[in-house]
Image (cartoon, rainbow, N blue to C red; front, side, top):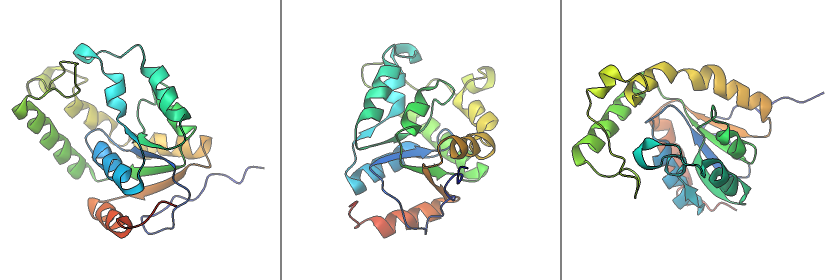
Length: 198
């Protein structure tokens, strides 16, 4: 009989081994920012999953699944956990050891996504090199069902209600640390700023 998934960890709990780290949460919550911080803190190579997925014109790259397989097969990394519906995200979950879950209130998630969207729109910078992809006009949120500002509203609760419970059942050895507010993450990062990963 299976012992079931490991307990959901709080930010103050001791951490298990963490050579392969995932970060999850709703769009725009700060996953990539945390991945970069973890990469610096624990000297883990960081691969931004969106940069593997998006080709020119926001199209899915033909090499996406193979690229994710390559990242997952390596011994040490940090990346976002997403594209679960695509199936590629599970390639990382199968190899991951530690999942950092940003489960912030909707008001915080929404404000962060608005700030990122406005910043990208105003600076007009290419989001991923050699793709030509830039933030589109804000009015598109009114007509495009898949605009990130609308997508966030439809999917905000999915990590709590669906994905985390499913992952804990299907990947019982994947340790999950939940952060319920940015203050918890700030304290967690500060406490580990001088720590060595092994």
